[in-house]
Image 1 (tube, rainbow over the protein chains, first blue to last red):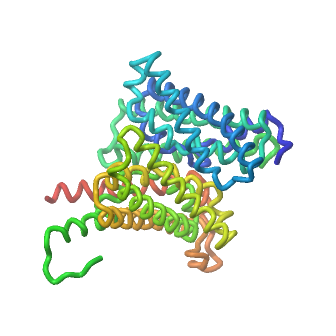
Image 2 (cartoon, rainbow over the protein chains, first blue to last red):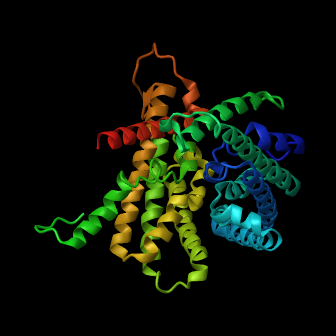
Image 3 (cartoon, each protein chain N blue to C red):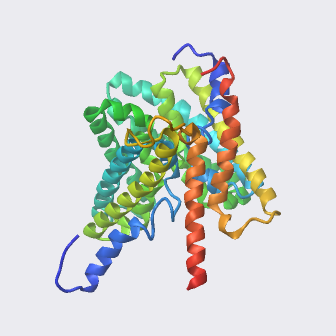
Length: 195
Length: 211
């Protein structure tokens, strides 16, 4: 798996195996923060940042754990790295944009339990990606998360104006829409020489 | 859990702690938590069962330990402490499954490690185990865990029956059945959970109307 080209890793993580729509990671924020377009893309960008930073740190930490022969500490180490990165981002956003901080609300600290973040760290380790591959993979998959979130938010903003039967309102409708988006994204499966 | 001749208030509290998770407060269908593993591992009933059992174990153990240390942990670092406790138990489960069955381990893949970030577990730690005694927290974990298994089976059952025409690997419809493969693929997961939620909404609205 180690000789996959960087371009393919990027496309694969962004579109073909989109984190939200094909691998089922990060569904909670996908449903929770996708009601408004402006919040959605800001959340997406903060997730891109958190995932990229934590992926770099996780790569370093994993190398250290392997050197120490202490792989059983992997899950705990990764989660600590992610929690501290989220804390950093939280402090940064609170300082630089209090309005955004309020808009993201509870979902900001919840990035810690966004499974996409831990997912990237675990997948890059399992696939034995090199450092450059890991970074590209992290950017691609978090970009894919951001893309799915923004797409869904755009659809939901339009839905506000349409007449939805009361039974179908809420999460059920979002899941159905996600299913349709996921169907559409399956069309990317042939890209890059098939997989 | 306990069978007593008389019902005192303590018992009903315990019963509620256990029963709420099963249906009334079902983590997946009512609280819409833990959706990622719910969608990702329910393409067959056996995967759903394995995932549910692993989550149940982590949920009960972490609830018990968090309830034990709830008075020792300073408020500011409580979430970090909970996550570390949960991660420890997940590591245990990860190694146990790897030792017990390598096929299950491969089928579930990184989703075993991802139990750490299953919001049901952290949610119960914060909302229940951090403010209730040990026994009740254990019951709460058990109830929620079984509720999670029920939800996983509801999804896994529909997806395996429609998508492969089998249940737990046994063919149901004979050789003439053309499997509806879409239900094994990611969109099928979204559609199935969406359909269950729709059904619950419709049921709830009908009950409200008649009441």
